[in-house]
Amino acid sequence: MSHEQLKLELEHLPVRLLHALAKGRVQRHFRLGKRRLIEFFLSLPEDQINTIQLELQRILNVEQTRKELRHNLQAQRKTLKSLSLPTTSQFTRYPSDGKTSVSLTLEDVLEGIGIPEPTDFVPDSWQIEAVEHLAHSDVIVSAPTGSGKTYVAIEAIKQAMIANQTVIYTSPLKALSNTKFMEFSQIFGSQQVGILTGDRRDNAHAPLLIMTTEILRNLFYDAASGEIDLRLHTLGLVILDESQYLADPERGVVWEETIILCPGQARLLLLSASIGNPQELSQWLASIRPLPCHLIRHTKRSVPLRGLYLQANGPLVPLFQTQSITQGKGFTFHPDAKRLLSEYESKYLGRR
Image (cartoon, rainbow, N blue to C red; front, side, top):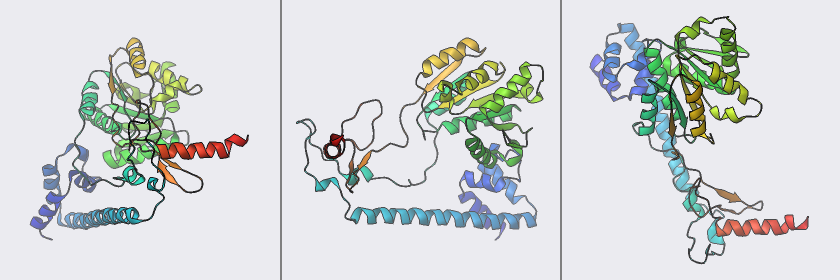
C-alpha cells in the first residue's frame, strides 16, 4: 500500500479508530485531532508504517464483521416478526376506562429493539453544562442509566490531566473498579491509569487512579493523621460513581467521610441514576465545601424501558398501555395483562 493509499484509508476512519491506532505510540493521543494523527502515522519509519497497515487491516476486518452482525440481527428481527408468537391478538380486547380503546400489540412493544445504526456522537447540552461547571465548582449529575454520565467523567478527566492534576475515580465495587480500569486504559493509555483496591495495586502513581470508595476514605484518613500522601498535593478531581450509596445504611458513612475529608482544592463530581434528593445533597455539599455545587438533573432516558408480562403457561403480552414505561407519570395496566394477572390471582392466591 502506497502512502497515498494509506492516507486515504486513514481519512475514511472515524477518530475513535485513529486513536486506537495511536494508542501506545503517541502520548496523550486523545488530545490530537484527525489531521494531526494522520500526519503522525505518515511520518513514521517504513517498518512502523508496515505495522500500521497490518493493524489498519485488522480494524477494517473487525468493522466489517460488526456490519455483518448488524445485518444478521436485522434479518433475525424480520424473521421473528413473521413467527407465530402468542400475542395480544389472541385475546379479547377491552377498553381500559370505557373511553380509550387499546390498540397496542406485542409487536408494537418489540418494535425497534436491537442495535441502532452508528451515528456521529453529539454531546447533549446538560453534558456540556456539567463539564463547564467543573472548571470552578463541584457538580452532581443525576441522570438515568445509559444517558451519558460517563462522557462527563471522561471529559472532566481530560481537562484535569491537561492541567497536570491527579484524578481519582471511585466506585462501590471491586468488579466495577476493574471494569473502569480496563475502559480508561483503552481511552487514556495504560501508562496513565492505575488501580488500587483491596486485592490489586497496579501503577499506583499514575495521574488517573481507579479505586473503591473505602480505599479513598482510608487514604484521606492517612492524610488527616499526618501521613501525607504526595498524590494529594496534585489532586484536582475526585469522581464518586454510584453516589446514591450515600443513603446506604451500612456503607453510606464511607461516602460522607470521603466528601468531608476531600481536599478543598479538588473538585467533586458525583454521578448517579437514582439519587432521591439531589437538591438537598447539593445544598449539603455547598455548606461543607469551599466550592459551590452545581446540580445537573436530566430525566429523559436515552434507552427507553419497556414492560412485558409473561404468564407461566406461555402467553406474552404488553404490561402497560404505552410502548415504553413512562417514569414518574403513573401507568395503567394493559387490559390483557390485567386479565392474566387476575386469572393468576384467582387460581393460585385465592386458594390460600
